[in-house]
Image (cartoon, rainbow, N blue to C red):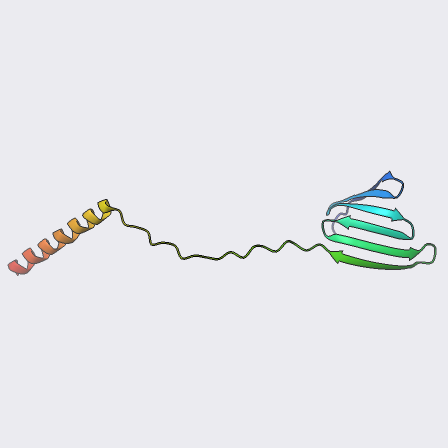
Length: 105
């Protein structure tokens, strides 16, 4: 079983700051009608004090929609002239060696 932490701090009459391991929230209201706002959304509670009867509704905070990213094809990477020159030199050497080997054999 894990540890829990929760602390309620009364700021003004009808305004409370709730601090817990999961985060911080603010409650506004008196016994009988309370609105609690946190990073998860807003919870509204209405009750008949002393009877044990209550009704709660919660509206969850939705994350803003991420903008749609359109992927554009990348332009082909250009080959540097220096690389082309080295490649051409290696190909010419390979052709020369192959032709010499063909004459010997």
